[in-house]
Length: 616
Image (cartoon, rainbow, N blue to C red; front, side, top):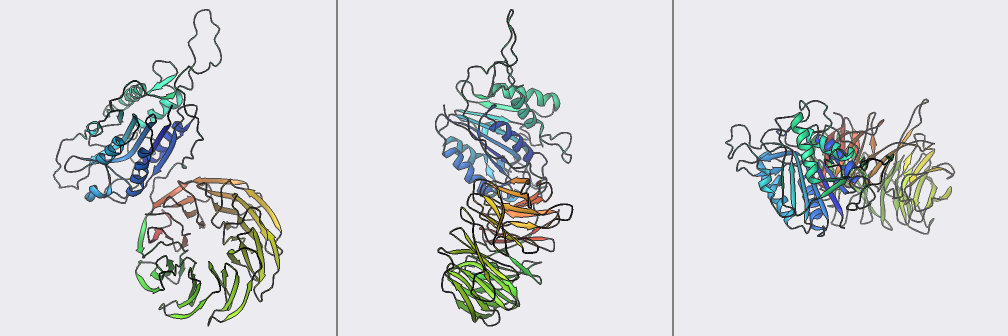
């Protein structure tokens, strides 16, 4: 038997203010994903997309159908706005859909039909739980009737289509839109029928697609007579979608009933490792104050000083941008190889490194070059200032320069057998880690060495987090372990096995109080952000994203802010780990955010620097 594959797409937050924000879709997708991925019920391999832009949805959807085999069972579920244009054509809205430009900003029914037609699978299920409406603004003349004619748009051999409704009016989410309805009526009964086995109408232990539709249809009409689900199919034979987990064979006369009978002989279900499903999503999307477009990916951490944001880009330029308006103050162009990925250090001058082995200092007000130094080896993209000295991490060592004129004071090279890759500064030490699992404490005043310690399995994160008093250093490694080192002597004080995947971003430490310990926030390549209790390393919570987290979180009193390779910037409650808001950019987010004066400044691989509202 082939695989069972499900792609769930949910959109509840829209950039177009004319599209009302919905309460149900995020919860719908999570609830349905949980029951579909359960190997005892349905055993699907689940992919879930929530509040993604059109390019992301289109790419994943295309790959989903392209990679299928003839004997695979595919299920595509969409919940959100369905829009009918003035020619009567159906479009499914994504987070960046514009009603005035549906052709290029939404997912059309024709695109979905073409993707399904090109798929080799001959068992295709499409489920649409949409709120349908006309997309045209008030005053425009709508062509066509009040029905969407959804089924007509998805005719094809081997397909079954289920819709929650088919009229240009909103599907019902409980009694009203603005309440706290957890799921729509349609999906609520869909999930319940699968999870509890009540959709097994003939009581044979299997839930077919026909049974599921009849069960949900009757439940929806009983509860909401105005809403009429519909079905269309062109499939040979029956499709078994799930097992009835509460099924037991009937007891015949003279037989002793059993407490629990084995499941009936039926089409076997693929046993898979369940995919992670994101934490239930919020009801609010992140609000953008402004976006500034550079000429390349923005991966450095923005520095915000005196109302100006300083940030570098892969186009070889350093930018100074007004923190309130997003207007450019100045830019310092370097060269094609001068990729700027270090965090700018601002102290009258802006000091930063580039990938062409250079160290620059430019005037913070005008961008005029003060001095430039060519380093002896490739920089590790880290730079720091203590007093009158600028410290730079390079692949072969650490360099110290006068902050005023850039003259070299000392260099410390050759301590380790492999390249240095990160650097942090305490009050008296320069601490560096190399690719060979070693961490060194070097004195700031000269080129000596104070201590050395080994971090097993490569210390790949950096620069790493320091406790408030700078006495503790937290380092992640390639096995997903978080380790603690004393900065005075390099003693290893503890560790916590986070996951089996690598930690590529620096942890963030937030101090506690006399009543409660501090918290360490750390991202992981397993697609989670973890909140760990200091000293005990017990997990307070973890938040699931759609891709690896390779940014260092920024934290204020109430919220943790971080980006992920899924192109989303998240705001998560510091105490509960529940999502407060999210913002979708146009590419992976490798720039760690900076929070200042109620705004979150963060870069993206889509060449944008974003200023997002921190609180909602």
